[in-house]
Image (cartoon, one colour):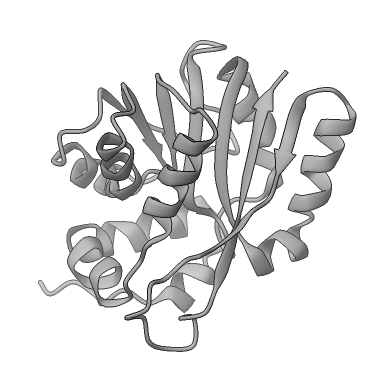
Length: 211
């Protein structure tokens, strides 16, 4: 059966984990050759570069890893070992084929990640914190699995950041002494070859360290 073409607006319109699993089950096999290639999707590389520049190191958890594009970008920066977590087993199956991950972990970020507390020295994410996906409610889950001084580089769709209160949530964590050295550089999500109404979309990369 032919797979559905990637539709960013359909992804942005998701409502709940079951819809997410169903949509990405349809798109997993064609995500890289369809969406990522056709839209010149550069956000995973952007996140990996920001993480490396911030002094990020492994072990790294790639949050909402999808088919593993950010993991590949991290491996090119000689960062690892890398684990992947995602709500979609179909996307994780594609990620495993890239041979850059030590382990893959199926998890709903709103319910927790089944790994020990303080398991990671770095956490990255590209494409998960956006419309129809996950908001700032997942931040405590991520902090639980991070060691003290762990470096984070989490891409947040810029429009979603404002609408969801992500910016405020991060600043509250910093004021509360949970994180430090917060920066929010803005990067392009798509490259110069992108077309369509989302071609100029940007993301804020929340860069910080756990206290």
